[in-house]
Figure 1 (cartoon, rainbow, N blue to C red):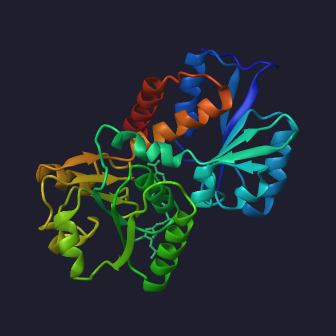
Figure 2 (tube, rainbow, N blue to C red):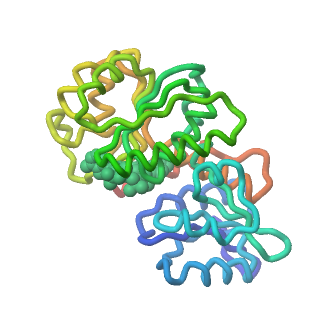
Length: 303
Ligand code: NAP
């Protein structure tokens, strides 16, 4: 058991609300294993206080911060330098202290997202992405890095979807990798059926299915894409749900019944956390299995 002493340093996550974050459980388990005299706290902060809190934490020599909803975009403006991933996404989830009293920003959500996909070669494959919010931006950046050749983004609001497509496509023109086709489509468009039949990967980056009271009812509206389109899924398609409560989500349960490979959001959460810890600590090896188990145990006991 670690003892908090006068020499203990602070790390943590800033968000609002933040009381349900799994990050303190995961990170404190890792810190104990790494024998680092740091303590990781969930720090609630309203938007109006964000700048003041981030500067104050740097002034008291905070060793590193995660940033979560709703501060990921605004915090980017408080960084001296930002990484390639943070620039592509337009948001940060990690602040790393500089010696001159400033912060650098990074986004480890991309690394977290692609980590469970790395076991397979996705070169020139086709993906469908459900949702065009904050995490969808990290997903697109990850899919580009994996060299997908086609990304179909499914949304429910035409204007919002088009803005997202324009933004993610134009940002890509400045980067070095192979350029995928990125196209938006509305969720009830019949054209979607053909895309589903041919998809190698479908990613859910919407909160649909996250309802705590979700029963495992496969007819429920809690299945992204709905019943009709669901019938066209091939068992060679991988389904990746960013949600990790409940485990499994009804969507992944349905997919597994059809023989599809499934991935849930827990690994993304663990891997983005481990990547942040690496940036703060400088350690080459992070005890990822300890973080994974701590998160799983917490979900089992408290969800
Ligand atoms: P967000 O920025 O609020 O975006 C949500 C997206 O989902 C928006 O495009 C929204 O569409 C769409 N959406 C919401 N309700 C919908 C519905 N009923 N039907 C169809 N589309 C709907 O949220 P986010 O931060 O991207 O998070 C999305 C999900 O990913 C959440 O469940 C979150 O917990 C999960 N997540 C997991 C991790 C992880 O580490 N595993 C990391 C980040 C996020 P509109 O634009 O039309 O509103």
